[in-house]
Image (cartoon, rainbow, N blue to C red):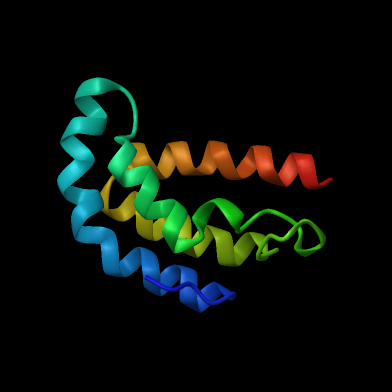
Length: 96
């Protein structure tokens, strides 16, 4: 999967892998952690670069754009959405 920079592309990439994230949801709940396979999908989709400032090579998406992406993740797996929010918050704080 090739990721171009931009909010629509990250959202599209997450939407494309949403069925797999949903499948991994039970494992996330049972183990109390997001499965590595899900983390790899989110990484390839550009999720972990959304809050990173552009000057550091990130996508520098607005909070509203990030919320759209996290909302899509949480729609299919609330646990994964919650964890993605935490990871994004760290990147946002580091960028400040």
